[in-house]
Image (cartoon, rainbow, N blue to C red; front, top):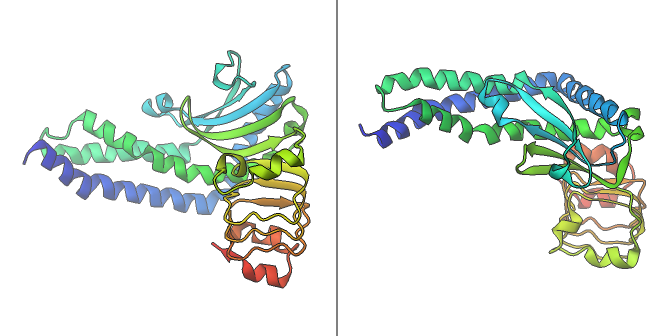
Length: 293
């Protein structure tokens, strides 16, 4: 058996199967301990907000980033950071940590377990191979924690500690990797938005302006917003009466204190997690138009 053949056999018979089991174990743990995990995340961010309040920093970005150096050394930390408008160029970010042994300890166990099985291949599977396989799985672990962070954010932004520190005109909360790709999980906008400039931006091809955004205090009534991706955008105090959102992607979209009178949602896709939040403001006809996933 060549090295390539050994690696292929090893991944199929051990690495992939063990990985699937670890992911299943974590999913089960999350299901059984979701509230506890969320509360731990909220408490960690609360401590960050208290630390921010002790500075004169105007915060434009908050990130929760996995630390590969910590994971490499069998650690389990996420770095929570608050930056000014220069983001990663901010030389004095406010920082604290959230420790997630329930997540990263499973990855460390995975590495040990496949390293044990690798001995069966009599030197063809090296420590470097094991390390590469470990890192190839890390994104799956990150994706498990992202929805929990998103739910925690919706709760901790209601904390008094969040409300009191100094914010830039717009604030983005992002989750991902340190100095690498991050995903926006909360966007807060306090800039006045002239309707004549905003309405033309709501087009299917303008996802940079329609996803992960925060719009408030606008009259968007009698508008045609067909086939637009509004994923995770938060609409607040918006008049959408007589408007059309046919075939729109509305996963994670929030309508807070919005006028939805006679708004058309035909074939719009919404997340069932938010069903209770929006349906109280919808007619039976509107409810029937929505595709819940």
